[in-house]
Image 1 (cartoon, rainbow, N blue to C red):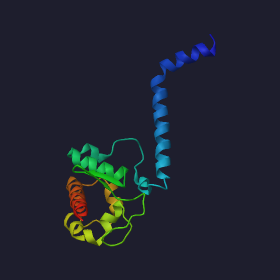
Image 2: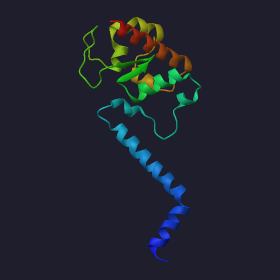
Image 3: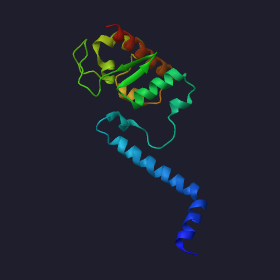
Image 4: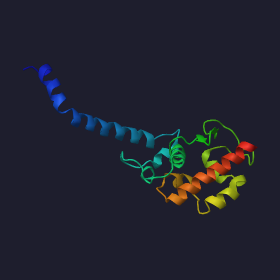
Length: 157
């Protein structure tokens, strides 16, 4: 037999091992490139490995899971309660309340949101760390309610 006859047979019988190795190699490369991202720096907080994050396994309501996933992955545009909110990460927009640069992290830092932050997230000093930790269900709920409150307030103005 010639190599061109053996190779397809070998690939057929070993396809699961070949695909598993390819999946691992591509996943590792994706993680490496994500951590090196200059455009979206919060990717450095992505955990090693290709397993699902623990918050996906906590039986949280879909609206909270969606919110957390958007915070972790998108960082600029959030869909909440039927509306899209562009937080201006990729544009130089300024906060109409304090003049600071608009971003998702700015929602947590802006003094105009301090009442909501004290109500829902009184012990939060590191927003990006909070979003990327596997925290308690109560904290995920509070994070969601904080965002709902702040985004609703921003929409009114």
